[in-house]
Structures are given as C-alpha cells and as structure tokens.
Length: 373
Ligand SMILES: [Cu+2]
Image 1 (cartoon, rainbow, N blue to C red):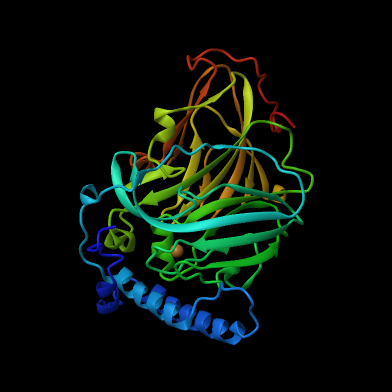
Image 2 (image 1 turned 135 degrees about the horizontal axis):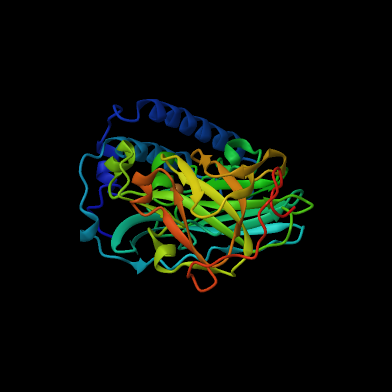
C-alpha cells in the first residue's frame, strides 16, 4: 500500500486537526472514543480474550478521525495500484434453519479495482459489501472479528440487529488481534452491520458494511427466489466522503454490475428482494421498473407491511423487503429513482425468461389483493 495515502499516512493522521466540516460528528466521535476507552479500561481486567483495544490504540484512532475531517487533497484513484479486483457479488440468498450462528469477519485495508476504477477500501472478508448473513429470530449469534496484521488502524463491528452497547462496537480490534461478542436476534428484519471505529463515516464510506437478515420464526411468506441488494456510495477521496460527493454508486458494491450481468429470473415468476441502504450519506428510492411491489416490509419486519407500492424510501442504514411479480418475459431494471444517483451506477436488471418483452400468464391482482397471498 502506498505510504503517501492521505487516509492512512500516520503523520497526517497526527498532524491534521480541523473541525469545520464534521464538527458535530467529530465531537460525538470524540465523546464516543472517550467512552469507548473508559469502557475498555473498566472492563479489561475481567476479560480473558485479546479483543479489547488498548487505550493507546484508541487514541491513535481518535487522531485518525481528525484527518478524516480535514484531508484537503488526495491522489486520483487511477494512480493507485490495485491489490486485487473486486469479484462479482452473488445476490442470491436462501433461508436458513433456526439455531446458533457464528459469523467470522476479517478486516483488511486494500486498494481494490472496482469496475473500472481503483479505490482504497476498508473491507470485511474481501468483498464490499461484506457477506450477507442470515439468522432466525431467537438465534444466538456469535461474532468473531479479526483485524489483519497489516492493517493501520483498529476496526470493529456494530450490528443493528443487536441491543448491545454500541451494537458490539465496544470490542475494538487492533491490527493483528481478534475479538468476539454474542447477541440474540430479537427482531426480524434486514439489519445493517458496519465498522464502529471512529470516524464511522469514513469506515462505512471506505466499505465496511453488510447485511444481516433475521428471518421471522414463521419465515417471510410464500417461497420464492430471494435476492439481497445493498445500495452504497463509492468515494475517491476522504474530502469527498466529508462533502457527500460520491464518485459512483453501486448495488452490491460494483457500479452497474447487474446491468452488465443481469439477474436471471423465470418468466411469470415472483421474487423477494432484501434491500439495505448502507449509505453512508445518500438516501434511496428503490423502484423496479415494470412491476409493482405486491408487499413491502419496512425494515424487513412483517408487522410493517404495506401493499401495492411503487418506490420505497430507504434512509441510510434502513431497509425493506419487497415482493414482486415479473409478468411475462422482459427486462425489469431496478434503480434508485433518485436518478442522479442511478446515473452514477445504482442501477441493475432482472431479466425474465429470454428478456424479450412478451405477455404474461400471471393474472391481474384483484383490487385490494397483494397478488399472491
Ligand atoms: Cu473499520
């Protein structure tokens, strides 16, 4: 990794102090850091694992937050040398059985070729987004986090599906170390997980996020093919992250990947799509062209069902589960209907049958019907 990287350079990390852009977040970050150090100091005595970050490492990361708020220049992404090319992200996801789950996450910091550009990214398990995880309400979930020995900073993970202090983010993991925590999945839904190390804006903006699907005990409903789609931003520089100027947008990490390689579905079929907006800073208006959402579950909870929807507003870190029919054959693009962002890569394609438009065999839904329940 180049030593002149503006984000990772230790000297800049310690030299730059500037609060103008992210002042409120920065203050919160400082408080969180102080709180995290205090928690760690108070609890280290009783810990037998090596997961707790040392106060010194936490202080380094607090300093790291300052560069995040201040970097005024960065090399163009094209000048970076890629360590590897981001692999295509398989959107298919399948139900799991109830029972204890163990999720292993490894954090790395790499220059990655994503589509046609190279970005410096911070990554869970070599992919952005991180792996799609699934569990069932009531499952005990064990999270093991390892931070690669060549990382420059601590990392961690906050599970929105948990009700732990900082979502588990109090377990800050220094380079070369590992940590663990457990929680029980109490609510069904589609939940974000993300690195919870300050500055959180940057750890998410650099790629440290993913989706945990918690199935209701009775399942989400009628069996049908299921797909997981995470919308997020890609940024070329730390300043762009601060200024919310995404270089490109993506579904499942790579701009336009499902336009170039459409998701193939049968003609006259139904699909259930789990959609998470990882942000970190843009909203989503999720829409599938050529169909209507028979049912949409806000945040993925069946108690939050609405019917006959066209576009679902998804705040950052929010989610939805949408069910739809592909009537006949043809192309069914999915987009954020905030089209300036769709134009930056937040667009994909379901291809039904042979992809050529044709009449369908799925009967029209009756008024008040959700189509298939
Ligand atoms: Cu991180």
